Amino acid sequence: MEITEVRIFLKESPDKKLKAYATVTFDNAFVVRNIKVIEGGSGLFIAMPSRRLKISCPKCGFRNEMRSKYCNQCAAQLPAVSAPMDHHGRDAQSEHRDIAHPITQTFREYLQKKVLEAFEIEKNKTPEQNVPSPGV
Figure: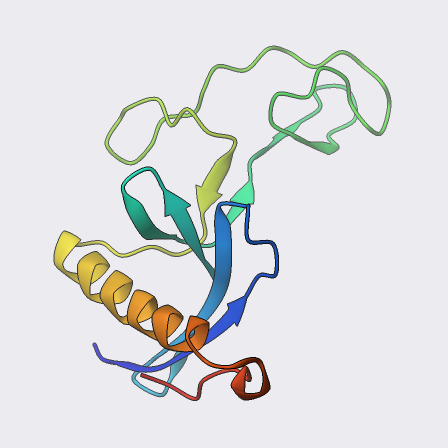
């Protein structure tokens, strides 16, 4: 699988950890949006798009965000839910789950390299040049 385009959308706030969003096209046929470029303790890395996990209210069935104490629809108390398990059988320790993600470490490294290369190019452009890059 080849990455055929990377578009970077810089975030304005210089003191925040979130530096940019990326949209990546694979084989001119499939797009993944909202890949985050984040400044971590050991440098930049990417985080895949994710969504908040939800649980159903046992009384009315309304889907509430994980760790909610009361239903947003009927106000019934929700049961305490333990942390969900990830695909390796470990506690996920998160209220979010990736929508799309690389399966192999090799592909994750390839994807991260391409996105971070495009991020550096976009970051080093002058303000008048700062339009989304067509690809890497």
